[in-house]
Length: 586
Image 1 (tube, rainbow, N blue to C red):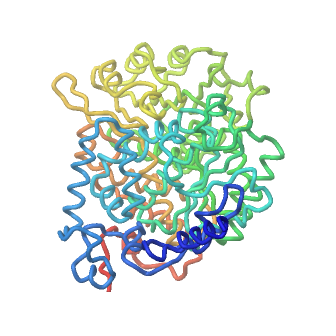
Image 2: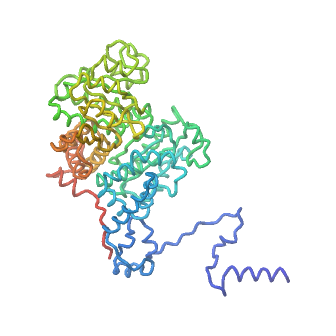
Image 3: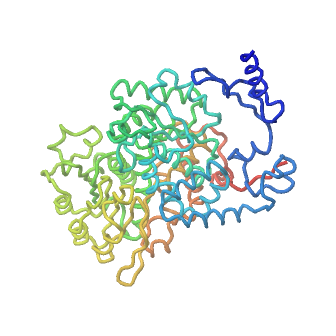
């Protein structure tokens, strides 16, 4: 009797016949922990769903008519705000944060909530927000990604998915992908191995592809390939979001990456651009060399950095009244960035002078952790350093190399801060009227020297640029505006040019075209302020011009598939660009 009564009470309670509420139709609430339940989802075209889709959500900007038509009435406060007022409000709120990481998190929340407002904010306030969504703040975000992780952004492909990467790619909801940025997290900025937490880099890069280059957000796919990490701190961190194992290497790594590259091509076609980002040196060169002839691939650390630095050097010649072939270059750092820049400079000089590239390389010297790269070290050098081993006695320190080589251009890509010491910079000033000093390592803490140090130690004569931003410097009654050799100048426009021309391969001539297009955007007024790069405020115009130059070169090389060629490539580029302005709904 007692059993039957309890059973009746349970049934009555479960159905909520009298007291209201929702019946537990699928038995999920009453299931024990060891029973499996099915995650049922009911899709209803209601206003509530609309407001939670970042692609369509306009927040308080939904008009009264839209609220009536799309079942939003009552779900929002009655006021209707314009997108401009929303932007003003969000910027006001962002400026209240004193900690950059808090700004980063607030922006990521906005991106997940209201996509168009996020991109309008970024486009209209690019100089203020670029250091937040990208270097230097993104570095700290990656270091703490496990702690600040809220919702997945992008696709995570780990060793657990070996043999079924194609299936994983098909899980991504968007089909028309045009650009993929992929990292394995082994060398994040100058911060080292951050494993799976490197996802902040592809996410940040692709938000800039959209904001600066106009690529539609739905056409962008950030991917992190998780093959483990050798970072002991992460392996012992209970909040780490990746595989807790040492990195896969050798054949296992190569096979996994090959499966990934084949799956990408199979799923998205021949013309999807794959940008390799923050891979360790040995993998970066191997992947680029292996897939450049079969895929549309680009390594921003090797090629993007090279292109933007070359653009600054080309622009600086207008101030110096010289040509590139008149210079002697000395690099501190012989990894992806250093050797990539050096190779593109050598190629540019070769094309200008007609000299073979083996000859033009001799104007360029590199210093690595063991000192000046010279012929006597050739046997022990990694393959990508060997072209830069010239005849000279060994030199252990950078200062000794500067005094021996007497370079006119000093470029830092070492990832080690404070390495351009006062003695080094003063030596550059001793034998150069206007020494060209580029401290390119990121983030700001890893820069080889600061802008203030460069200007002060050269008595205001240096032409200076850095990888991360520095504030204006007052020296001897003059204000200097340090330039930023930021890859953001190049890769968005390059990507747009490749996509709009339907390119099937990337070639060095396209990178040269991008460099020349960027250099041509620097005005006399910029030069007067000590700048060798144009202001970021005009970045979409700059990107359109770079895209047009890259597109023209792609058609010239016979690598374009979107035929016939448009008459006006700049107008074509501008017309292709995504606009973040709200759309009106029926």
